[in-house]
Image (tube, rainbow, N blue to C red; front, side, top):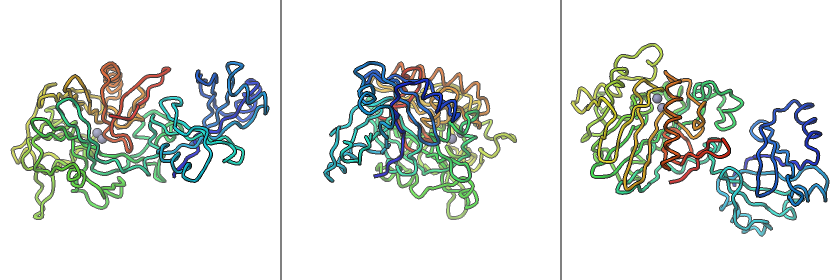
Length: 427
Ligand SMILES: [Zn+2]
Ligand SMILES: [Zn+2]
């Protein structure tokens, strides 16, 4: 079992006195308090590195914290270890005869599930196990198993596939968000890079479509080193796992033409010629994006590699679309701008259900809050407006949202609770 220290809970009798130490004397910052009504507790969270301290204050005389303080005085109340799979963790403990307070997990704060282990089995410390469903990119390294995920959406089948992982500068990925904040959800490597997935989406209906196609295999060792590329399991593997081949694809749809989305549109053959990867497919690209990609400037040149898309025009398989429209039954494109002037998201509707493939509008679940906008975006204020509008609609319509670059979460539902925006993984 892999467990990470999430937080240490400290039962407090006299909050101002506790703040005088933790906030004033130590100089630590304290987040706005959060009430956990079911426990009659108010939690004051103090971030300390990758973990936090939680000052726990009773809000009613019958609160477990009030009873604890009455019996033991203020002090260390519990430690919380975060695990990837709480059911597996509990099964493992049960198998070893460990005494549990909770045999089955129960709901915790912010959509998490929690379970307590009995202090008699833990040498006197109350240990809480927690599995976030509010997902953290932190666990990315260990959880790469879900690279093919299937979802039913009315008459359509959606299959998330994966072209592997790469790394980008964490500061660039989170724009104006300070590192102490983003590094908590996406820990950087020794070169300040964070891990991102490349997850194209297959839509199967009357025809079979792939939206974006990852990085592809045309790049050299220097490029792979610079971007920390790991394509040990790539689009070919995951397509095969989904029971598909490049020949199965009728339509290729581009969110935009950056290399991590369009690189897989083409392959270099044995003779060195670059040709379309999906031999039967029409490739659908927004006209404005095509114009920008074929006329790059100093700011976007590193992202637009012409071998990824110019050969499509040469092969006569390119179809340019001018505006928001239906590409195949149930699949519509909608321009967002922001990331690039003509970046588009894809809305998929069938049987009264809606999903959205948001590409670089919200590249990972960590980008769900309004202000978490990539430094790469050419028009960040347009990203903000498009994101606010989309999120409102996604919540109202219960949209299943696909996060193309999230290293852990393939898809989920955006929620707002107590003024906080979060993503509940699922489908
Ligand atoms: Zn992009
Ligand atoms: Zn991207």
